[in-house]
Amino acid sequence: MSDQRDQSPGNANGFDVEVDVLREALDSLRREIRSRFPATREPGSPGPAHGSVDWPALFTAFRRRVSTIGMVERSGEVDEFGMDEVVLRRTRRLLDLLYEGYWRVELQGLENVPIEGPCLLVANRSGLLPYDGLMVCHAIYRHHPHQLYPRFLVADWLITLPFVQPYLARLGGVRACRENAERLLASGHAVLAFPEGVKGAAKLFRERYRLKRFGRGGVIRIALENRVPIVPIGIVGAEEVHPILFKWGHPARAVGLPFVPVTPSFPLLGPLGLLPLPSKWVIGIGKPIPFDHLEPDAATDELLISRLTEDLRSQIQLLIETGLAHRESVWS
Image (cartoon, rainbow, N blue to C red; front, side):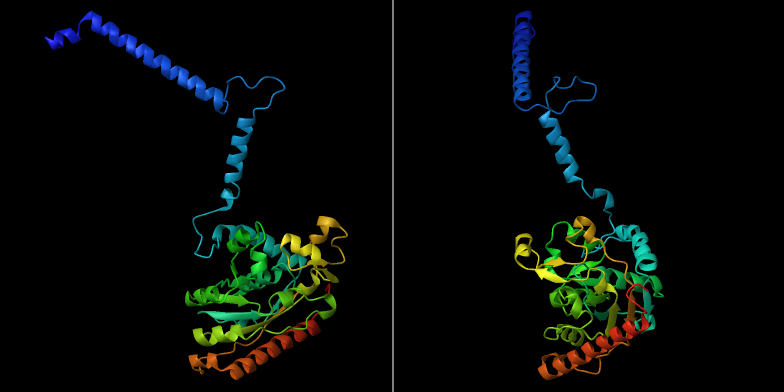
């Protein structure tokens, strides 16, 4: 019968031969793969010959290292704009040091910041790097009764720099555009905006604390359409952190910057020239400007927008002059 034939010694030997042939073929294939694609050396196994470099192992280690850069700093507490509460908590020690010991920031008018609800904070722009945004948000967080931490808007050109956007996002920075500002306000956040834009960041030292134009009234339109108050803020001290003596335009285009700043320490001192100077800061917060008495369609009235924009600009300029008069000198 068929079952008896299958269990005969001859058939068993034939099956063993087939298994041996298959095993030998698999071993040959395995040796071929190992010869063409060397695997990473296992712990305890003999290493490469003396004087040779295990390039596949080095490449594998490098790839793993690059893929995990920054993973230690990430957490699950990241909002839709990328702000990371864990990174913020770790960074606040450094921000406290800058706030208390290095720039010795004085905050005036905190009572003018709303206790709750969305609002649009509008300040003068100072310097290329967003020290002003970080310090204003940190100052309000330190002293606000509800530990309010505003979200500050960051210019497009700064967002595009390598490694800058992820870290600024974790600290609360958001790309400056109308859509992002409206989404933040709709979520109940306080938003810090700098309507001077690049013109304010690129001011020469001889033009310090002279406000540039506020564009076409974008902050006023956002406040009107979203029914939120505007809180004016004047920042004194940030424009001496990196005083710009003059600007190089041509070298900047190669690295994607609007210009290369020349300061008393940069590029003369090389990388050390990038360190901010320990100027004395005064942050003044003015009384909120409500817009709930105006209709939303007032945002289409160009004359009204122009007048409200100039009024806001004048109030911020007055806060700056008050801060300059309060400060004894650049350093104290």
